[in-house]
Length: 419
Image: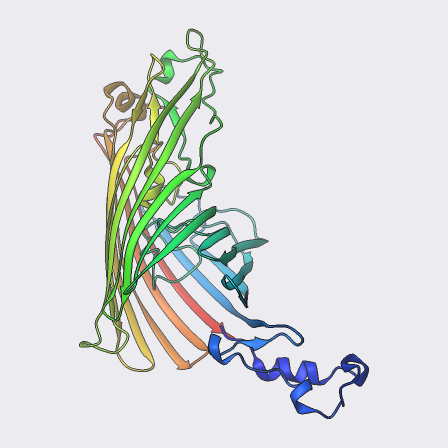
């Protein structure tokens, strides 16, 4: 994902002499793009400025096959996705340190929605748009809470456990020396809202609606280190839960706080092979289940943050997740990633259990991929993943889960090129 420096220089060289005013058109120092040595490969000065710019991108073509053993039988077994990504990274030296502006946007065409029989269509997806300046970060990017974030699991629709959330935030980073750093951020609460359910639908007004109230942003803090050995990150988040109830006899807003904590470590393993890495990560949440990164491919097993009891109080949903991944480089052209995860959430309130039709849900996934790189910008990957989502103490209620479990096999063939 590097700028095509020769192409940029050629484009500048094609400008007419008038574009360079008093400069002799034959002067190579004026017509050629200068490389920014301090910023690394791929960065070139924008003519007439002190800003260094790198432009890059990628193109993915993906063919998916998935199979549900239980639900839903009518969904597409195969579908195709093509993604074009454009990246722009601009850096300017200032008296207060470097000013960095980063943008990544994706144009995606798919023959069907993921895990569904939806129609073909194209979509424009902003993926990363943020500014870093004097320790501050502003914009839309990956949550500060995330660490593993499905590293080396490929494809647009991975069915793997692990939080990977793009989110609006404002944050600050303290660099403490020796690779240590601490961060704090305020992040978009709507992106983390798993919602609420009434604990007893039968006793609630049929017209009842539990809508989200105005909430404070997510409060996220982290501490970690990066070095030659690898890296680690400890993360914590506070999540405000809110329900605006109009049920007769309540007529008030119910608020509470949920939280999530996570610890992750990545080891570099050059003693096995150059570039080998091992990830280990675990998370726990109470009333903030989105931070667990559970994968509900059907959309019918999603856990709420809490259940609203008949007295208007909240019964929060608790859960945990753990993931691991090992990346091995067989040689310069072949590598493999082996990954797996497990998580679950539990429902404590007995009335909520009866209404939901389960005491909790367990989620498991395992998978692996094999990537061949015939030439450096081109890679071909074959990936398999198995995902299980199973309810404990299941019983049909008409208001809760449609089936006791959902099992799926996913196979991906992906061809990717970068520039």
